[in-house]
Image (cartoon, rainbow, N blue to C red):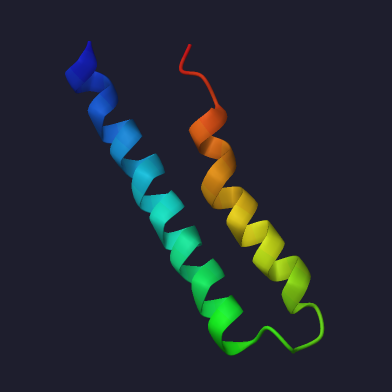
Amino acid sequence: MAQELLLYVLVVVIAGLLSLFLCGYAVWKIKDEPGARYYILVTFMSAVLPLHTPLN
């Protein structure tokens, strides 16, 4: 059972790391642009919220 879920967990982890990278890039490069604050917030929340979702 654990090996069947490994692929899905790996995909969620990779997606979270990508979102976290995009959030850091936005903070570093485009923090003063219009709408950047909301983009940073959305990318950070998309990286963090899947960690709190229980596996049923």
